[in-house]
Picture 1 (tube, rainbow over the protein chains, first blue to last red):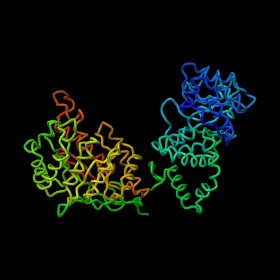
Picture 2: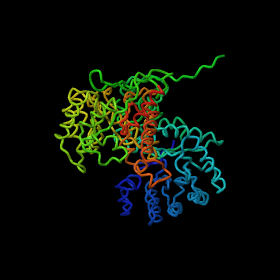
Picture 3: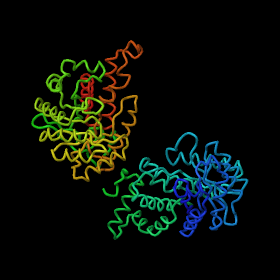
Picture 4: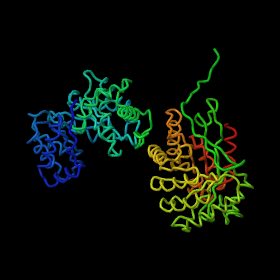
Length: 285
Length: 313
C-alpha cells in the first residue's frame, strides 16, 4: 500500500498562506513529517490554480523535493501547471503521479503529458455526465479511460484507477460501491489495474471526532479489497494498520475482548456496508 | 405445482401511535409491511388524513380551497367544528400561522388561547403546528403544549434549530411530537436520535422528512420516505420506525397549478377540479411511499384519498 500524503492541500489555511507567500518552511515541515510518517508520495494540491499555476507547481515540487526524497502527486485541474511541475520533478526519487485524467474529453490532454514525461496518471472514473451510479458504471468508465490511455501511449501499469469516494453522510450507498469497484478494477485487466482513492472524502461533513474512525475502517476495508494507494493522512493510516487485526477479526465474525471497540468496529462496518442508515450519532446508537 | 406468491418478511415494525382521548382517539402506524402490502403482514391501522385549519383567516389560500370553508374560516373554532361535525374529520391540524413574525405576529399567549378554545369545541384529536419559524415556534409551541395538556395532541414541528425546547414542551405535557428535517434521510435519523437522547420516548415521535407537491420535487420526498420505511422494516432501525407525516395541503395549494384560473390556462381545464386532483394525487403518492399521517385541505381531496385507502386495504 502506498500512502500519498494529503496534507499539502490548498484547502488547508496554513498551506494556502505558505503557497501565497512562497514561504518554504511550513511546506517543507509538513512534507518531512508526512515522509517520516510513512508517505511514499507527497500530494501537492494547488487547486484549479488558474493564475500563476505553473510557477506555483514548480515551486511546490522543488520545495518539497529539496528536503524529501519522494515523488510528487501533481494535483490540479490546470494542465499547464502539471506540465510545469513535471519539467522540474526529480525522477531520481521516483516517477511523478498526475492527479488526474477522467473520461471527460477536457481531461484527455493529461494523458499526453503522462506519455511525454513518463509519469504515472490517476484515472478518475467519472465522465462528463455526472457521477457514476454504482461499481459497474465505474468499471465501464474505467474501461474507456484504459482504451484512451493506450491510444495516448500511457502503459496500463502506469494508470491508477480512482473510483471516486463520496461522502458517507450524503451518499452512503457509494461507500460500498467504491469497495466493489476496487475489486472489479483489478479484474478487468491482467496484470490487475492499480487503484487509488481520495480516502478522507468518505468522512467529509461528518463530526470531527468520528472522521478518523470512519477513515481508518474504510482504509482497512479498501486494503482488504486490494487497493494499491490512498491519498490520505499517513499518521492516521499507520494507526489504522495497528488496528487492522481487530477490524479483520470483526469482519470475519469473531468476537473481540474489548466490548467498546467491538461495538465501534461493528457499527462502523455496518454503516460503510449500508447495513444501517448513517447518522452523525451512529456510534451512540 | 401450484403458484405461490413470493412474500417478503420484515424484521422491523412501525410504532403504533394513538392520539386524542376517549372514543374519538385515533391510531395510525403499527404495520410490519410496506404500504398496503397487507398480504405480507399486519396493517392494524389505516393512514389518517387530518383537516388543516389555521388561527387566522386563510387569506393566502387560493379561492378554490377557501370556498368550502368560506362560512366558517373567519373563526378558528367554528372552522374546527365544521370539519368535525359537517365534514366528519377524524382529526384536525391547527396551524398557528398567524404567529409568524412576517404575518400577524400573534403572541404565544394568543396562540395558547386559540388552542384552548379549539380543544374545548371538539372531541377529535388535534395536531398543533407552529408557523415554521424556528425561533418563534419555540415560545409558541411551549405555550400551546401547556394549553393542550392532557389532550394527547401532536406538537410540531421540532427542527434542528429548536428541537430541545419543543421536545421538552411535548414531553412535559405528554404529547406526541413531529420531528422535521429537510429532505435528507441521514439528518432525519440524526434528529430522531438527538430527540430521543433527551429522554423523549421514540414511540411518541412522528417523522416529517419534508413534503413537496407533485411536479415540485415530489420524487425527492417519495424517495426519502421510501428509504425511511425500508430502514425501519428491513434493517429494523429503531430510530426510523416512527410514523411518517406528509404535510400535503400547504405544499400543494401554493403552486401555480392549483392557482391558475382556466381563463389563463385553458388547456389545464377546470381550476377547482385540477386543484383537488393535485392534492389527492400528491397525497396518494406519498401514502404509497410510506406516509401514515396526512395533513390536507380540500374536503373533496380528503374524500378521494380516504376512498383510495378503503379500496387498497
